[in-house]
Image (cartoon, rainbow, N blue to C red; front, side, top):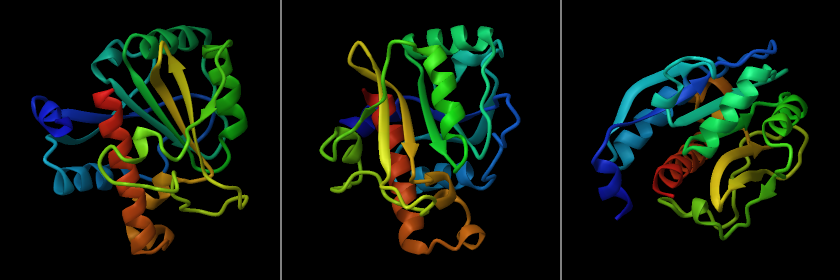
Length: 205
């Protein structure tokens, strides 16, 4: 049922270009590899192109699935705070993937977007961990970073998951070409499977 719903349209993933000085463009092979994996491993018709958008762009609402990553500072202007809030509460979805270093600033800026919302850690039995592939122990650990357990943190609006923050996991590094980070084939596949789950869940819930 999930896949038949997705077959009716061509989906695409859009990288968010944000300000603050961080490398929003990090892991250049990550999204192309994830897109290729989804196309190969499922019957979802996904656009082969990685799109890029700023929150203030006039075509923001043509990109319902936003992905952001980076190692450093994230900064949203007042205009971006209001537009991102409207985008997410109007049906958009954001997947933020900490590439080690953006945690403090990302949480700070998202608090401006949603002052009254708190991040909720998703339990291992949440549907996002079995929307296509099954993860019985939740988010996979790709890079050690601070040796903390990986967390899938979520913001909800009227019961809908509108923003997912994958922390201490670094899925984007796992999506990259194998020779870049040398994480091994197992972690590479795990990260791609989890990325597929996130996309399917976002477009079907």
